[in-house]
Length: 283
Image 1 (cartoon, rainbow, N blue to C red):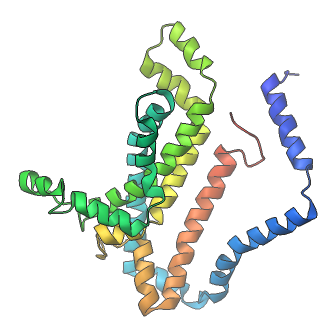
Image 2 (cartoon, rainbow, N blue to C red; image 1 turned 90 degrees about the vertical axis):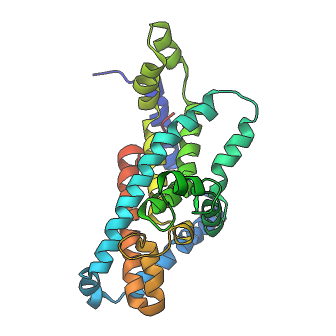
Image 3 (spheres, rainbow, N blue to C red; image 1 turned 90 degrees about the horizontal axis):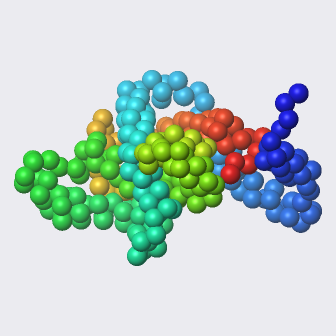
């Protein structure tokens, strides 16, 4: 029989203790009310959904196009967030430099900004007459606003902070002795980062990617402000849902349910696979 490591035994003991713990009755009532608060809107959607027209709505080319565009742009935004967000998180967690707090606040500001404000800011910078957009237009004949690429830019702007904060927290909490041991054995910085650090924080990295993707999938305000609402090019599912709400509320409900189903299924599935749905804690 293989002996468990001390850390594994501690994790199991902690999980068992959490499983046996009981909330006081007032706290339990408040927790149930909180769960109901989150569940009732979705239950309302299910109750109002015109199930007899679901097949008809899903068969519309405009709906399939909006769904395909949403998946393409949100996955692209999540990939871009990984490429730039992981090094940024590593810098914020591991490098002590003047103004680090200011840089962290700047890079996560879009999390608390109203999405429309983020879209206006993007337009002021990357619009055709914006601070940098004018040079993209004049020198390269390249325009971001009202394009599919503009949708991805807007989604990255509002979603990457979720990945940065998640990965930075994991990097701060991990035991750096593994990195130091690899360095003393002659490993390069890149080897340590790619073969030691990243595998250690993999659950947090996956969680950050999922959060960034989910935020990009549901992005509305910055997208419609910076990229517009053009079917087949910039009209994602949230925009199509908003448009349908004004013309066909039943279709809007079905589109909303599609987005909820996709997001919920991915979040639950990845939590069980990567974040320890049984209650285990990764440090």
